[in-house]
Length: 295
Image (cartoon, rainbow, N blue to C red; front, side):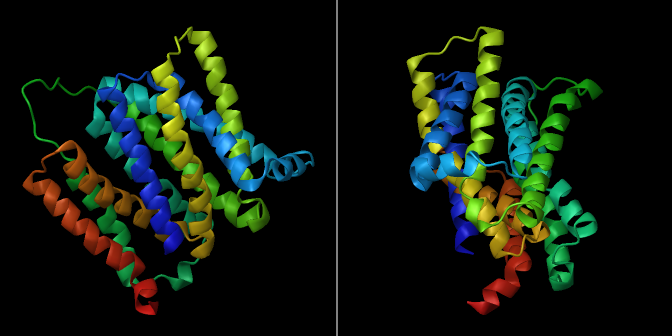
């Protein structure tokens, strides 16, 4: 449970970092690319530069997965930024959180990891997790909202799809490809690839990089590396059962991020949002009641 809790808190720190970008007018793309470089430096310092060099100097079966995930990472972050700008925070947030459906389905019906350990309360918790996410994310209608068109779904759908691919891939790699000895190095390879891909995007789009964009990337990068590192640890602690880990993770992030937004940004929640937060707490107990009993 400690690894899952740390993953939740680190993801909330990432959320808070992104919230600050609009306040300080930080350009998202260069900040994200800087963040990936900081992730590489942070991870290498944590593991030891010599250990990283030793691991990467040998051909590994996991390296292609890390390279592929690195490309998907930078594309997902960029699309999330574009979707937020064009379709709004609420729509993008729902798409991102609902992407847990993909790793849950794969874990239950494709990988079939830990399905024997699930009971009726767990399955109920998985279903209610989606309801809780929708309730918390629901916003009041305003006169400024534009009429809905099918094309408006394109960016949120891509965020949903790529987010699900990332979590499903991490679940698969942690179960079948890597072991604990490379859990700390694997994210470094992902982030280095993302940094290279993001740098190419900056050059191609001729994006200006300012000092405050770099600063924004620095305070995003440190929690970002450890969020993936502890996510892999959390998956292993739950026998790589993504059907339990990802709903619990997303619901935990919702609860903590909502509380942080109220305290730090003075956000106000409607009755539906509060009902969603309350339901989210119930979901946590339903999903993890076996672990709670052990405590």
